Image (cartoon, helix red, strand yellow):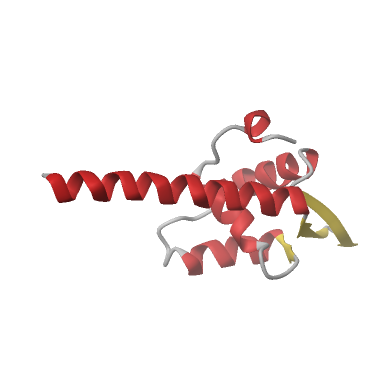
Amino acid sequence: MSKKALGTLTETMFYVLMSFLKTERCGTEVAEFVVQKTRGRVRLGPGTLYTILGKFEEEGLLKEVAVEGRKRTYQLTDQGRALYQEEVARLRACVADADSEEVQA
């Protein structure tokens, strides 16, 4: 899956991918991670969260690794990690451009 297929990540998509960098998680753990990481600035409702998880699984960014009743646990794939790293590089370039404009102003 190439970056073009998914397009630029939204802020919520970015944080969902980030939540899987160090460990496998289920949906509620992802939502808790995002709230903690953003200090409450970003909150994911169940509809948004499970839509993102489904899309990421479909695109090969996440894979389901366990199912216990309704609880599904996912893991980041190599494709997901690569997309996350591309997005971090894009965001860093944006911030560097903004910083260079502030210095000149």
